[in-house]
Image (cartoon, rainbow, N blue to C red; front, side, top):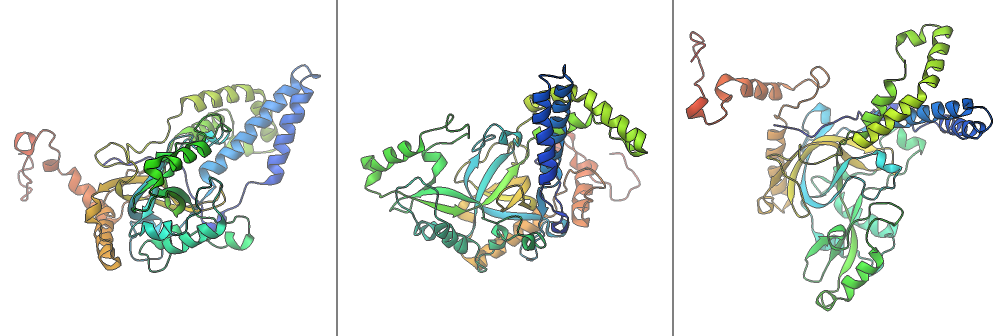
Length: 422
């Protein structure tokens, strides 16, 4: 089985720290001052500015790839899928998806992940819709979000803990971040029918209002359309489990810089080698910056196709079982999410029980099966569990290697081991 790729790593809460303001300010100042000095220094200032910019990019990209995700570990016994609770399984309905670059400005486009937002089962959409805010397109009041968050994350909800927006200690005690949760806007009508805002109004690609619909006008037109007006459309926020399918841009850009870093062990041997490395990094900074630009343009965007069992895409209203790493995104205002999403299995909505007890049993069956699926990570980094190893061994058996049909190019297992060739 193929899996969605994972390039990022997560850190434990005790090891998390936000980027240093002093480092960011120093490198930013050197970039600006060097650029100004370039006008009077025959290019020396430009070299300093470019070298500082490259180091600034290196610092930020490394944080995005290896520092901003905080590892979460599920304590609930309902559904752990390995890695001491860090790999979780979740079941629900897709609210909507987020294309690469959606809701992002050109600078934020360095993160080229693809997103999927899942409303965790079991849920009652009318409960969320009861806390609506009418016809406005302004941001939702915190009080409205809080009401719907309480509904979704209640202790009575089998998967409510996956939405928790509280930060893990000791980060929470430091007050560096404020958890808000992740919400998507839905549109509901009197009949009980509902749709994602993005599916009705359109999508904003974050280019400062240039790319994307005039959402205020689109919403007004939708509400005033006679066939919709009789159903009294309302917009409301729904808490979702945000799931990311990783793209390669951050990793590729960082690799491009590291190729010119001269940062091997010899650089740190003594003061002379450290100084020599600094000089070399400065000299080759323009080449590194060009390589970064090439990496940006050539990067592969995140996609759901590798993760979806059987191929294809997910769409709004699809019911899915998701497996991936559970983490807290410390690079934003804060929420729990699946990052990276490794496996997505579509299921029939009518098979998913709506009562809590029935759903727990359904969830348990899926989790047990998915926890047996071998992952394709680098050997030795994330060793297979005994259950996963048994499945991997079974998959590698000769009798399971047929391609056309077992009657044509398959074989029978040799239980006696006396005649290994069939």
